[in-house]
Amino acid sequence: MGLDGKVAIVTGAAQGIGHAVAWELALAGAAVTVADIESEMGQALAAAVRADGHRALFLETDLAEPAQIERMVTTTVAEFGRLDILVNNAAIVGRTGTVAEETVERWDEGLAVNVRAVALGMKLAVPEMRRVGGGAIVNISSVHGFLAAERHVVYDTCKHAVLGLTRQSALDLGSENIRVNAICPGFIVSNRREAAAFGTDEQAKLNEAIYPLRRVGRPHDIAAAVRYLVSDDAAFVTGVALPVDGGMSVQLVDSVTHKIQAVMRKDEPAGPPNTPPLREYP
Ligand SMILES: NC(=O)c1ccc[n+]([C@@H]2O[C@H](COP(=O)([O-])OP(=O)(O)OC[C@H]3O[C@@H](n4cnc5c(N)ncnc54)[C@H](O)[C@@H]3O)[C@@H](O)[C@H]2O)c1
Image (cartoon, rainbow, N blue to C red):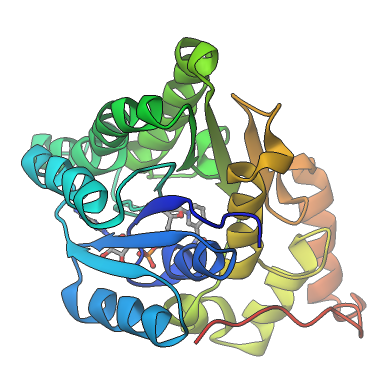
């Protein structure tokens, strides 16, 4: 299936996007370490992946703790014998405040999980990837990595930093056949985020109208992009920041405003009738 014999770590895989990424890599043949601070959901995912006939391991990991990142890498290699793929997906997500309001504690917490853990994961993965002749790292940034949202100063700064880290490391690691890429998701609705996205018909319609592809994203959209970037099909791809956002980030603000007005006038058509079914994971 393309990743047979490969070994992957996916951080923040207990739920949401990471959950889909872990399934997608396992279904493509990789052994997968599910690393997350959420033990119950992480254990359940690893058990379900194993029950489906694949290799998977859950490691309770707090990415704010460097020693636990080290344990995540060493235990994966001890269990599965090698490391080929690292997907840095976990993050502390959300709107907190302006630069004038943010606290030292929130900066430390955000930077530790959203940036430092990404760098430390890469630092520890690289020697293992060297040992097997190369590897692929995918860092999950966001459209917040190149656009800004009100009162998101910690999150937006971290997601910009992830793109810098990705591009810089692609340069340093390219000669060792270690590819480093980033994905910039638009709004991705997982079960957990369902209510927020579709709480009312009006909200759902607005979401559909704003996206050029007339729908918000699902975890599978990101998982499929990760699968491509870690596969040999992407052997000549490194240092990219790939938006997977239904076209959201190419629009002028004017274009969005017109669509919102159309929805309010009730003359915006609903989404396309034949939206392809998206893969759902157990
Ligand atoms: N969902 C979206 O709309 C969206 C959009 C753009 C980017 N992203 C990015 O995609 C990634 C996944 O987002 P999601 O929506 O699936 O989020 P989520 O909150 O559903 O899942 C994130 C996971 O990370 C884990 N995590 C958080 N802190 C941790 C820590 N200290 N140690 C270990 N694990 C920790 C959480 O337990 C959780 O399981 C994040 O990097 C996020 O910034 C998401």
